[in-house]
Image (cartoon, rainbow, N blue to C red):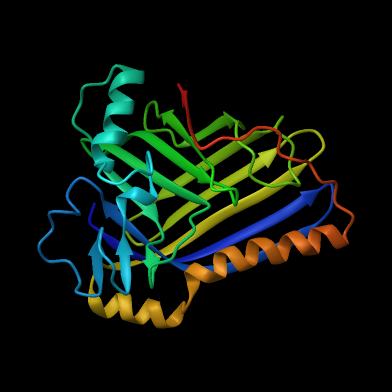
Length: 250
């Protein structure tokens, strides 16, 4: 695996109890988080833990505290909870900051050993500045799996739901499908990427093509919430205040 710039198509297709579909395109990066800080030949438009046109800050992820090494944090959680002492290659799929700003509703870590996926980590944020991280152990390289919902994301979804994941990784494209479902609600979401080399040329190309993608994400979330209100969607209030929480799934 190499670092990549990803032109990313995202869709939300709500099917029950009411219908609503929207999609948008953003710029994402696929980064080797163990070595990205030490990489000497990074594009000059991209910086790690420093302001640039595009930038990746470790404090935006994991424990969300300055000074933490993100790779060490993720690998220590896996070692502690799954009793796994293997040295893993960990890649993060997420959007970088653009002009110092980003909101990632979901960031996904792929943890490899000998080129096989051993763990997938889903880091989910909501607009209340809260975060929950699901650690999923992958058996026999099977990337279809189910996780019980444990985190308030949308005011139009209850907590008694399950996520159904289907992950397809290819060199030139990633496909990640996430269905959120119970007997009353069904939301199909996903992202499809087209992958490019991690170069200045591709950053400029996709940065112009997906201009202000970082700001678009939060605007789209609130605009769609207003649309759902107009459809008389039932609203579920958030009960608990959280900051960073974790869960682990075999």
